[in-house]
Length: 301
Image (cartoon, rainbow, N blue to C red; front, side, top):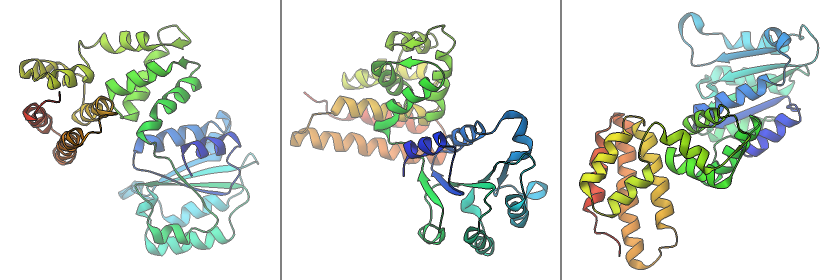
């Protein structure tokens, strides 16, 4: 089940008693929790909405038995309670057995929502009987649609060209993309086009990842590092790499001769290596090395 299924469940008021939401992006968990909160009237949230984090330590750590007690307690206002358990992947084996027992006879007045960071382990999947499991992760090709849905929720209509430009410029970082949509609400328009996005983004910088790819393809090292010097003032290393991946993907679409395939393989192998290095170091150095290596690749005719 996908993010679309999650939205459908939200539209129906989360009718199931138990859910497991999995994602490799913590931002999507945060988005999910925000949406779940909207199901509960503000004046009832102190009593009908509870969130626990299994990754908490020390005085903030909550015994799992206490979470089960909250699930089995009748709501103060009647209706249903929503219980969030974050970092479900941290649940200990001895506590998992207690969860299995609860799932055999779940409370009719509570909705349990487990948030799993990363892939769900196979043995956990098989044991979670009666739990509706939904993968929140969004494929890169579906991000433009997600952006349009995000904008619609804020009373905006965003064009296809605007969504694609935003993704191509910012990259697939959902948190940063969401921030740009928030900025769109401040321009005083309900319909947002590509030009509006350009005005919002380019007011803080002169170049985009599109310009960087063009300069690399032209073999202009001086321009490449001039553009890069500007971009690094406003971008995180991983976000910039994501934008480069997106732009190269678009640039190479439809190029499928043997020579093209060899060139494309070389480019994306370098991008992948930079991805691994950035994740391990968190610094800009792998990006600088990446640009130097891309400049040395023979240019396409």
